[in-house]
Length: 111
Image (spheres, one colour):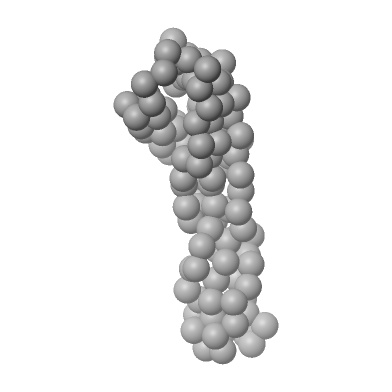
């Protein structure tokens, strides 16, 4: 288990519990960008641990993983990436991240 994912998952659970005033939460949908540095399987594992004994215990966790997207500073091309180490077709490694680093709570289902 990664300590990084544990702390972040704990923060997500705390945020949901502080925001949603329902005695029973049945589902949570997260968006974790593919180049965010988070491992979705670790977040799933940590979620079960930190949700135990809360209104989120037993809730279905769905994780959406949008791809990373970068823009080349040399030729202005935009393309999807799976890892932060990327190379543009023009040969440049001078890239700006457009998206893919996000961690977002997309929805919460309550009973």
